[in-house]
Length: 116
Length: 116
Image 1 (tube, chains in turn green, blue):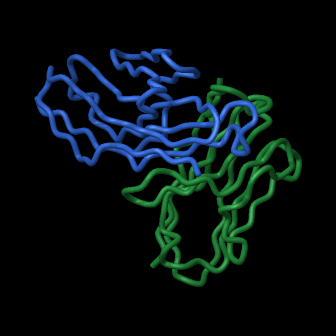
Image 2: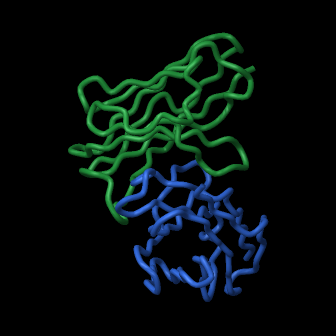
Image 3: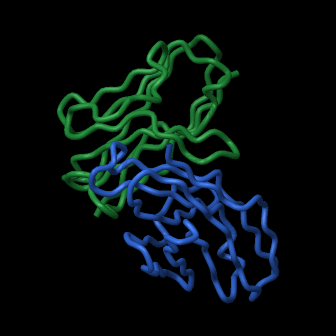
């Protein structure tokens, strides 16, 4: 079974530029998550989708971050304009069906962003 | 709010030593508890989980017991190997009825280095 696919793996951009990350979840997984992991910290949820609807985006900096999952399958996370503090690993994850007790969440390898 | 606290790291051990990484949590509701591992250059992988009090999760020689009375989920392994060197994250999700249902809340991570 193919895992969660993410691209690009690495990206270096200058501040105030824009960047987009793509994620393809495990086939059939209805729930998709984007996490931000800053060096030395645990991942923090940015946004959670159930099919193509947003369940939780309370920690998404909406003035510069946006995400979509138009067809309920793959998803794109965009940052515009980027700031130095956005340097982090952006992790996409998915889980099957409705989030439920103990449901396993599967992570991709992450997209490493450096803003200079 | 919900939170996870892990012991301060990094942890450095010799091969075949006993490992304990402490994890305590605060949650409104009844969480499921997880340990994730992140090997160098790789994404997060689920190591083990426990979904209710007194459950013991185990995998690859690692184990952790869900202790509701002490709100803890400490990770243990009797004899570590060099290949166990990684970053270990404790995390929780809330079970039915919680508003962050299905969302993982992570601790800050503990770096483990095992020397031959």
